Length: 149
Image 1 (cartoon, rainbow, N blue to C red):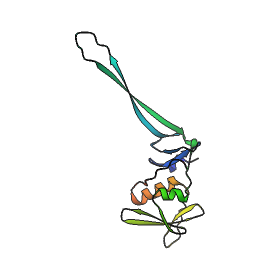
Image 2: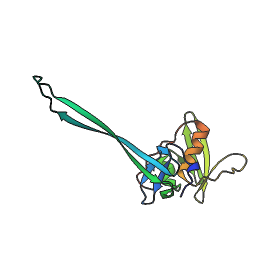
Image 3: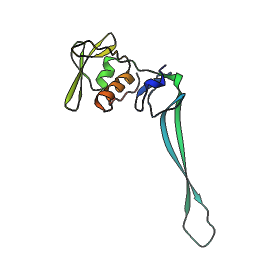
Image 4: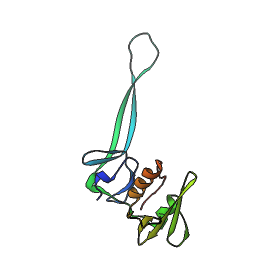
């Protein structure tokens, strides 16, 4: 389970059944992952000499949401890092390019850390944490397409 304070719009998480979803809205105890507008039309029978057909349209919003306790983090793996655009050149070193800049990380024991002169205190274990860190650093969303974790 993930605490909703860790999440933001666009984060990728998984349901208890393993379905990958993107967060669209965070409510007090639920997560909205999908909204769609359904359009229903109905022909109206008009009385009188007019031969035109008129339609009545109804718009319905269909919302998919999950309780917050049904949402789980997606653990980082080398495969997920590659799907996020990371490149691996030397064993534990992973690099992602954002614009003309490169950000270096070290990935050891399923934990991703920023690579810098001083050891990093941040331990990134889950995809939503990586998305949040890169957004905070670069102001850009991390593009990732996952089917199942």
